[in-house]
Image (cartoon, rainbow, N blue to C red; front, side, top):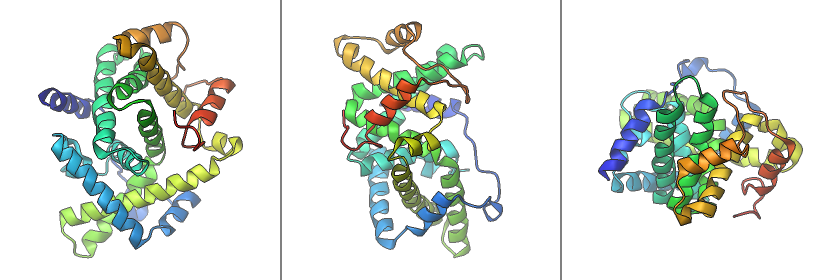
Length: 294
């Protein structure tokens, strides 16, 4: 556990966070998707979300991860990446993972892959390798920790959480300020804002998946960069299945995949994905095809 705590400390110290700086009252108009998601929130849903968030927080405490649970951040607890990390776990719990499994992948395996990638490639000279290694090795270590199917669920949910991070951050901050104005205390306002944000995000996910039910809708929402991350995650998961059980090492498998042209190379909106790779993600990702699980 001491090693995991050190790893997570490095993880959050090194990853840049992007606080939502614009005042909530002056935020840009919400998209149609966000407006519909807001209108879908019900009291019954909030109760269910609160229970799931409590289970995640309890699991974080039991696994010595509470200091890294975004709700406990002293300042800017709505930072966009913190929102994506937490809600990817929440969505995945909704999809059948245990809270501990979700945390092991998102805060354990992902943290390990990020620190290793930064150590090896984040020198300003190999950004494409850094990004590809991060996603590949996360898929590898996550599959080792919780299995293929559950890793696929968590990592697909992470891409959706990243996709929605800006509207989610704006919503959380808005509701947090609302609750403070209503007279709630600091921690109560934080908690209620995170719970409502979870319901908001879950509703946006539902609406997005409806729009992505066919290839046209999928292509409308998912750029080559999202496909790149999902593809490189998948290649890492498959690499563990094929070699990890026999003692394969993630870094070695990454170099083989990279040198063999198996990964999508891109960085900061520079990806270029082949048609067959995009079609594979559309057809073989459970989020868009519920019959596909492994």
